[in-house]
Amino acid sequence: MNLDQVDIRDAFFDQLYLRGSENENIVVLSADMDAFSLRKFSKDFPDQYINVGVSEQNMINIAAGLALSGKTVFCYSIASFATLRCYEQIKVNLCSLNLPVAIIGAGAGFSFGYDGPTHHGLQDLSSMRLLPEMSILELSSNELAQKAVDFSIDNEGPIYIRLDKGPFPEWKESEISFEKGFRILKPLNQINLISNGFMTRTTLDVAKRLTSNGIDCGVIDLFRVKPPPDKLYEEIICKSKKIITIEESCKTGGLGTCLSELVAQTENSCQLQVIGTPDRQFIEYGHRGWFHKKYGLDEMGIFDAIINNI
Amino acid sequence: LASLYYDGFIRIDPKTPKDPNRDYFIMGKGHACLALYPILLDLGFISKERYFEYGKNGSTLGGQLDVTIPGVEYNTGSLGHALGICAGIAKAAQMDGRDSRAIALIGDAECDEGAIWEAIMYAAQQNLNNLVCIIDRNRLSVTQVIESEVLFGDFEAKMNLFQWDCHVIDGHNYNEIFEAFDKATVANRPTMILANTIKGKGVSFMENNVKWHHTMPSENEIKIAREELRITSDNI
Image (cartoon, rainbow over all chains, first blue to last red; front, side, top):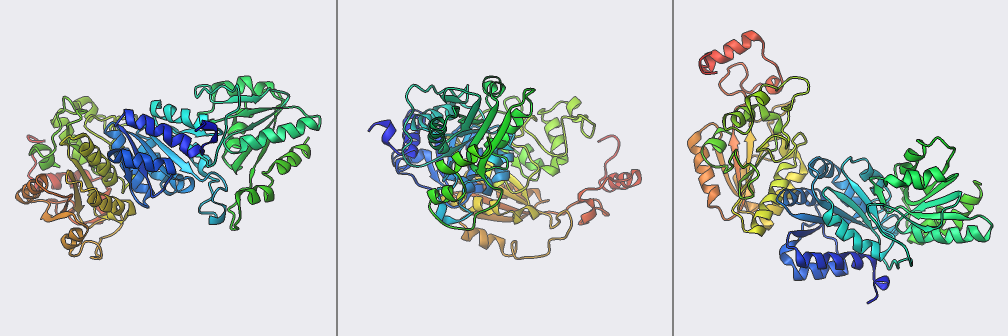
């Protein structure tokens, strides 16, 4: 099947399957979390797959022990639980030892919209950003997901990957370099929109709408949130009059905060607008799209927020 | 610790402390590092220079263990993690067909941490017979005497229900320690050793006294303690 048509989880785990078949030191741990293509991995490589059950803290501890013994480990659970439920285990047992463990968080943003605030993945990025040795990726396309597997295996320390669901086709002629950490999907202008993951596609739609309203914006996919790319400052921030970040995360500590730390260093007068979810938990239930519409994260909501701030 | 290191139960060579076939020892209660440092010095893991850095500003030996110390596998300080990590190490050894053992030494108060119980269940499910957990049952936490028997009462039976071997021993009796270690070596499932100990053993005013979890003795107290332990200036 064409890579663009598959679910991004399958793009990720199919590549992990391929790499796992070549290298028995690659081990996958799951905290009772499933994905179609992960089943194939667990069936064909039972010695490299452990379902630790509903025990995220133990999953991270086992991963630390395996990695201390030379394994490259992938841990898979719901984003909210894989990060916050076992936060101290990650801080002490993965980060302070700088171990090669990738944490794969499923259920970005409001993906589990009907399961309440326990399941919303809104603080995963911000919490992981606080950990000094942690790298963070948020993936906007299937090809990026596939390449993120290779990058994680080569990466020497811990890494958090926010993995979405559904097909995420690639943009033509876009270049992926994890060393660079971002890619320009629409040529830079005085106003530039920075997004990643699921919101990238929405952001491109917003940019199109802005263009038809006489406002040309660049669009950047910042898929490596941490460490923030070296060239981001020089190539984007220093050349922008205004940067607008768009994220499906709480505004406290996420992509917008990441940019604010960089924008604060500029000597020119680059403005910053942060679009994300407010600093609260959402005890209400609905589809992801319903949440986006209600909280201004759909195309029209973002468009209005930008227009009203110009 | 003396029997772990000097009676061959931990197989680790100070010359090759990263040998993948070694036994991995994690002392979860890293705050007891002062008992370990003299052993690491004596066996040649650390130099005399480094040993005497302890307690100074900028020291590379602190009040917790860290992986910059040869022979130390883990950065201690946060309780409840050691057993889970050792379970991962034991699992990796089984995957690789190495006969490495993973040995965790944890405190009794530390057993309040839930992650320990996640590891206990996991180790039994995975049949990690190369995993040993020693609990230092000194009955004292930082602030209180642990009187409740909810956890440690009838402990052997409880651990057997969790499908672990369990030996309840006098942690000051070498024969009982050897016997438990010998049984752990040939066990078919993970081994728990509950070692009943007396904190401050041998020093009358320190024994079983919460105060001495973290107190500096005065000159006079040091003198009395040395006399009671029959330590002379010749054998320090």
